[in-house]
Image (cartoon, rainbow over all chains, first blue to last red):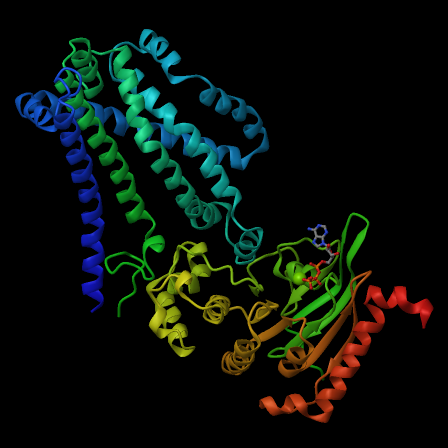
Length: 270
Length: 262
Ligand SMILES: Nc1ncnc2c1ncn2[C@@H]1O[C@H](COP(=O)(O)OP(=O)(O)OP(=O)(O)O)[C@@H](O)[C@H]1O
Ligand SMILES: [Mg+2]
C-alpha cells in the first residue's frame, strides 16, 4: 500500500517535467509551422534534431568540456567560499578583513573581468574555472555564514556542559548546521555557473566547449547550430542542478525522510 | 550523622556588571535526592545551573561534587533545558548517545545501551527516526535519555516540561519519577509550576530575585509513591500556599508598587 503510493509519486515526478517538455517543443513546432517562419530566423525542432544528429560528436565533446569547467570551477568556488565562511565565523578580525574582498568579488561584473583573466591566465582551463568559481563563491559564503551563526546558543552551552572540545563542537554541531543553507546556495548558483562557463568560453573560445560552439554557429548565421548549442546548454544546466540535488539528497537524509536510510551508518540494526 | 552531600554549593555567587544575578548561595543536595527549585523569572535559577554545569564562571565560591572541587569544570553533571535541543540531523539513537560521540565516538556497547534506554522508556519503535518526526513529549523524553546516557549521578533539569501541554506534562512527571526511582540519580529540577515542584520533590528550594538568592528550603513530607490524588491532600495545599506566599511577598514588582495602597 505504502509502496504503491510511493511509486506513483515517483512516476508523477517524472511525468510532469516530461509533459512540460513535450508541451514546449510542441508549441515551438506548431508556431514555426503556422507562421511559416524561415529557417534562418527560427529553425523547427526537427531542423535542430537533424543538426544535432549530424554534428553529434562535436556537441557531445563540447558538452563534456563545458561540464568539466563547471564541475571543477563550481567545486573550487564552493570550497573556497566554505573555508572563507568558517574563518570569518571564527574570528572578528578575519571577518573585518575578508568582508571587503567578498563584496568586491560580487561587485565586479563577470564579463568585465573575463577578458583580463584570459590575459593573466591564458586560454586554457584556468580563467574559466575562476569565473565559474566567482559565481558560486559569494552565495556560498553568505549562506554558510548564516548557517554557522544560526546555531542556538543553548545548544552550544549544552554540548559544552557535556565536555565537548572546540573541534568536536564544530564537527558535530556547527558543520551539519551549514548543510541546508549551503545547498540552497549551490542550487541557486548551479545554473548561473553554467552561464559563467559560457561567458568565459566566449572570451577565449579555443576550448571546444558548448559556449564556443554557440559563438561559432552564431557568427555563421547557422541558427540550427545555435539552437542545438542552446539545447545542450539547457541540458547542461539541468544536469548541473540535478547533480547538486543528488548530492544534497545523499548528505542530508533528515530533510527527505522520517528515518535514517537503511544502508546508512547511523541506521541501527539488531 | 548527616550523609555527605552529593552536590554542594559553597558561597557561590555571580554578578553581571552591576547586576547580582545570584548572591552568595549555600546548598547541599543528598545522594539520590530530588530537589525542586522555584522562583520568579530572573531570580538566578539558570545562572545557578550554568555554574554547576561548569559553563559559567562564578564570581565567588566553589561547586563540589562528592566533595571534589569541580568549579568551572564541565562534563560532571547531566544538564537538560526547557528546549529539547535535539540535533535534527541525528537519529533518536544518535541523539541519545551524543555525549559519547562528542568525546570521540560512541562504542557498540554505548549504542546498545542507548537502544535499551529507548526501549525501556517507550521509544523502541523510533530508534532510527529523526527528531522532526517526533511529538513534543517524545522529543523531551529523548532529551532526558541523552542526559541519562551520560552516566552522571547528578542531573540538572531546567524547566524540562515547560513547553508541554498539561496532559503530556502530567504523564511526563510520572515518567520522570519512575526513571528517578529506577536509575537512582540525584536530580535538581527547576520549574515555574509549584504543583509540579511539590509533587516531584523531597525538598523545594524557593528563590527570590533582586538580588537572586535562596530564600527558603522547604521539606515535602508526603510519602512516596505519590498518586495524582496527593495533589489535593491538605498538607499539599498548605505547602503550596506557603510557597506562593513567599514568592509573592518577596518577588512580584506589582506587589511593591501596590504596597502604598494597602
Ligand atoms: N549572560 C548574561 N549577561 C547579563 N545578564 C545575565 C546573563 N545571564 C543572565 N543574566 C541576568 O541574570 C539574571 C538571572 O538570570 P537567570 O537566567 O538565571 O534567571 P532565571 O531564574 O533562570 O529566570 P527564568 O525563570 O526566566 O528562566 C537576570 O536578570 C538576567 O537578565
Ligand atoms: Mg532560566
